[in-house]
Image 1 (tube, rainbow, N blue to C red):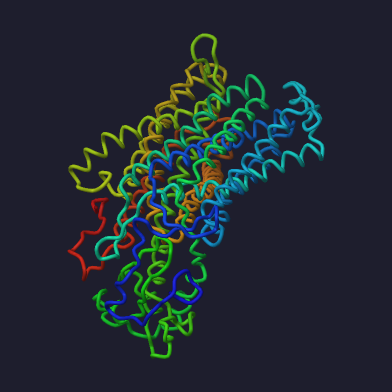
Image 2: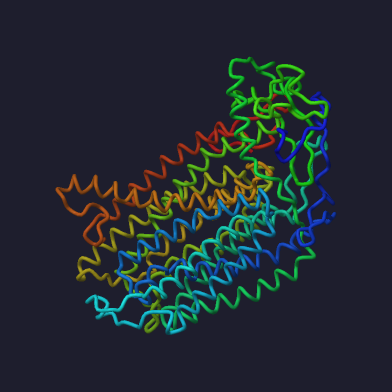
Length: 617
């Protein structure tokens, strides 16, 4: 590795030396973060994961209990104007979505996943205590104001103290999200036993890891479901203070239980940031752009001729074989003279010579980006459907039975419920049957799983368009309020939920397995960044669509005006279905050229069919 990176070279490159590895499998060395020493601890698998998932579920429920109704809370309890409340909510949502990048960097570079997760969970608890107090103590919130006075603009707004307490709580929630979201999934994955293959170069997934990804996401959806139903009902019908206090108390209990499980956990050391290594590879390859690569069509012989020292370290860093994709970067590992390598095997000029391992790690990042973009586009479709489903619900009959009515925001819980119900069916029945046919663990690959979800999301948008046409006609015939039950929106949410069970879990697993081993925390942050980017882009899509359709409609409100009864929301859904189809074609192209991390080069493995039309396995 380049000097200053996570690993060091111990000898000059030879064909045999490039194959030697430490054994990071069973009983691998792990830093005891609680004590600061190094201890050999056998991974406990599900015994340890239960504590981690329990903590994450409580934290996720608390975060959702505030983040989901934040605009409504600011308007009704803090007497903010709708535009001001929306601006505050948007700023909070943006920083909330991108804060995992900072937490991931700290976890991978220095703190480690356990410390970062612990800090984030503690920040979440303090944040919810502050927010609960702000909703409970009279001196920390504006006086109550009725709907009539609010519409007349006669409500007293929040004072400086009120805003300060509220914003402190919101800032701590952002910190909590940055600490918990990127670390909880990979820290749980650390508790499973990773093994190298007999050659020491291929990384084999531990038994149960695919199931762990499935159930982790089920827990995420269960937390959101509870926040959108039980907690939302308490906030709407009882009090905001109690609605925030219940998840806060639950989080305290699970935090104590999580600490009780510390003797069971495996604590892998932070390997250090690889961003400097990425920069070195780019600089070194540019400096050597005139050089010719040896054996340009034979990856095995080319690797033997390049700088490929032994990969050493205490973490689970597995050696990656050289690939011929993005071969321009391979030039960073060309040894031009013996003086480039010190007697101990390390490079004398780290910005001119990098190892094959570093080159392949950079390739991992570059190859993931096109698939990540497809994920962002899928999230845009989900955001559009869920956002406008809420607006549809506001114009429909919210009764469940004769006397019970549900909060409009709770209709989105059907999306979460569909995932909660479908994932166990897929995991226990469908995946097993598919595995017997395809001989692939889990039934299908992570790219195939994402592709299936993309197709289903297009179907969900078509279903939404069909029901919207009926809803709008009914609303226009009844003075703008449709007598149709809000549960007629359930099919579109359920189908999109099934799409998420494929695509979102597929994305999580894809990022966590295809990023460099030292960056699995950042890999998880990439998932949340895709969600954050889609929130901004979804607004842009609506604005562009309205501008185009308003121009064609002679200055009318466009397809998606403020009053959806006066627009053509069904046309918008159809347009988003076409957008999803285009995204699917783009995804197929990405899959066609993608090779999984650690996949053996052509010269060392049997011929493999590329992932054309999602047939690769």
